[in-house]
Image (cartoon, rainbow, N blue to C red; front, side):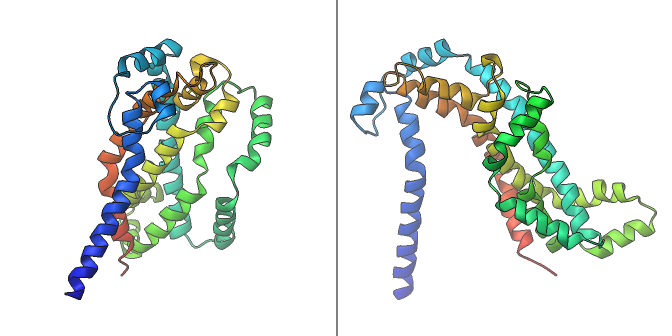
Length: 275
């Protein structure tokens, strides 16, 4: 009897937690169909009738599909760079026993703790010196350095990669690059996919750096374009349009998560078992 009560309490807590997580998303979708005046005066779970007018406001203020394309041009290459070079760095730290390895790993841990915003002024000065303002290059290339991803993949690789497998490949005459691409990368793929989801979401939602680096509206990413609705003169009437634009902007994130979420479970379960 006591066990059933405990299970009931646990299920109830999980249901309440799920509702608390889904409620903001549901309110976003509902507010996307309501007018700005209704949103500012009341909270309801009943959809409104202003979806068409909100869509007209969004498309009249900026080209949302252009913003989609701009965000994809930044998020996709940045995610690929993060995944590949972080995997290569993690492989080197996990497999090779070289002098100073622990020092390098300690430096990576230190950089994990430093907020990226602290170096924003210096980063902008460097970008200006290289004449890369209003270019996507400063938003993509720095993705190569992702200390958090390196840390996760190193720990993950150490838990699942057998040294005997690498030695067998070397005895067969395989080069180090061949071993990395044909043996290590497939083994690391669940962990890489897991971290790639987070990297894609972070790059897709990135606002501060693109806002500073990009100066021409035709190059703005979607979060920066959406912020222009909030900074317009008629803020109240644009609230419904803002919610609609945000709701549209999360579609790629949901698609990526739906296709890659299975790797999160597999990477966690694989990382939890060590021979």
